[in-house]
Image (tube, rainbow, N blue to C red):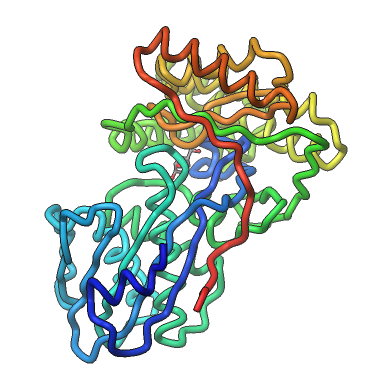
Amino acid sequence: MDITERFRQVFGSDGDIREYFAPGRVNLIGEHTDYNGGHVFPCALTIGTYAAARKRDDRIIRFFSDNFPEAGILQTSLDDKEYRKELSWCNYPRGVIFAAAQAGYAVDSGMDILYFGTIPNSSGLSSSASIEVLTGFIIRDLFGFDFDGITNAKLGQTAENSFIGVNCGIMDQFAIAMGKKDHAIFLDTATLKYEYVPLDLTGARIVIMNTNKKRKLGDSKYNERRSECERALADIQKIRDIRTLGDLDEEGFLAVQDAIVDPVCRKRAKHAVFENRRTIRAAEALRDGNLSLFGQLMNESHISLRHDYEVTGKELDTLVTEAWQQDGVIGARMTGAGFGGCAVALVREQAVPAFTAKVGEAYLRKIGYDAAFYVAQTGDGPVRKS
Ligand code: GLA
């Protein structure tokens, strides 16, 4: 699709119209660790969000999504800083514009922006973070701001936390803003130190498996998990001087776990600590070319997310347990927040067609509707295309 052409149809053709793209992301391992001071290991994808944008001379902002054309043009103003339910998805870009203003990057005029996304909604591949990072990138370019990719990621996270009301960590926005083709990003969320690790998969492919179950109630459950971890941390801090759960290793956790009063919070914290250590080991395994260890750590990650963190559900568990039984599978786990959305598997290239056919068949039989499969292509962070 020609995004600029579509923009002209919707908004008229005058002015300097620019075209942009930002990716989605898939997380290979390190789930629910990013708000616990732990590590994550995501990569940016070639699916993502396209946009065309131009400045206006007034303070009006007009949004249009070609994914929801029936909603028409949604109009608002720079001076309306309230979250508006009726503006639905536009609250993501609005949140970024307001977060940028608070950080000292106030746009001095309105804009028209048309978006078109190729990430399935509510799939756990970060369609909202993609819109956020793209919006930060657009205003940076249109208004000549000089913030870097990490600042852009933080603007997106601030928009989620303060405007949308999801207390997410930095992983999604960071993976998108800092994405690099053929690499995964090994990020320490406590310090924001990061390393690009080459995705040298020696003939294996990253297969994304979509449950096609939308994440209903996902946001409130997400915030609940986060506060359970915070309660666990507060209990541990009564007896041990740590800043985050990411400061503990497995032995350290086992030594202090009895300080956590609520057994549910204890399980959540255990996942956060053990998942962080798995992620560190997985990045090392990939650097060493030890794919089978990487796969085993993915499998352990899923088991922990299922039993200790309890964010999988029958759709994700069906996809993953079916995946584990197939020839050529190296590892499989849920990815993203959970409660529906996607799982990710590492599969030997020649086994991919039979893998998707068999997992797909079993899923349909057990769940009653189809899953979808994509062989992931990794990509770079946001770009201006014209
Ligand atoms: C969502 C959040 C991220 C991260 C993951 C779980 O994608 O936006 O910050 O917490 O869930 O790992």
